[in-house]
Image (cartoon, rainbow, N blue to C red):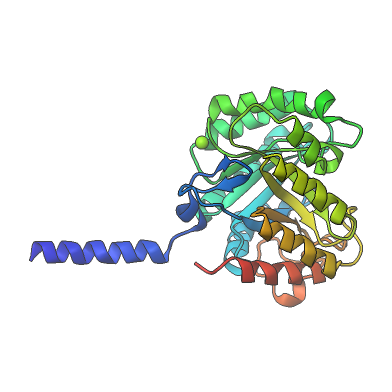
Length: 320
Ligand code: MG
């Protein structure tokens, strides 16, 4: 009798857990194996989600309600906190900007999804970056949810061997001292397009992928060829930011080129976060001006880009 009750309880618990399994419960700790990102079972994993806009300009979306809405309505499995480094951001207001990162990380942990902590910089700032990531890795390094993005978009004037690689060589050991294993995504020259150059001269750390960014209205087959070359030389890539519009974040949605890119990402198991959750009046914004800062967006509050990306996320990421 006791055994029957126990097995009944155990069975119910098991099915209850299975039904409520979150993306992080399913995939767990991520790691790099060859040119793929794999999950706790060693299976290739593709995360699909949304990037928030610059934290200093759009702080009103950095909260648990927005993260929960993105998980429930857009079915994202990853969200990206784009922590602004520039003068109005972390460099002058480190505590304020760190608190925004923590709000999004805490919300992602609570929601059971992955979170990219993006050092949203164009200039190398290794001391500030090391301070920021030291804090984040010490606090959150035990959570499989957290992915570190150490350098959003290095400028084209900063070469890999001269500036960008030495920057990573300074910052990544600071993270690894606190967190030996979580995934790190390392920025590449020319606004994170020169993944082939980075792949030819890789970083000497485990569980590092390289950042690939594209904007469908500007970047085309030539950039897909660079990505294919990087993958062929054994590098793992992660598209931490992509847009449906031109590279300045504005202009019309390029539907055809977006389709080509998304097919390329799926064919190569590349994880991806779309730019961006903001109601700024520009083409790549997912929300129309005046949208709520706490989710609950009806379809008529979405822009053409927002509607396309949400529909695509809902199709690609199966419901829990
Ligand atoms: Mg860890």
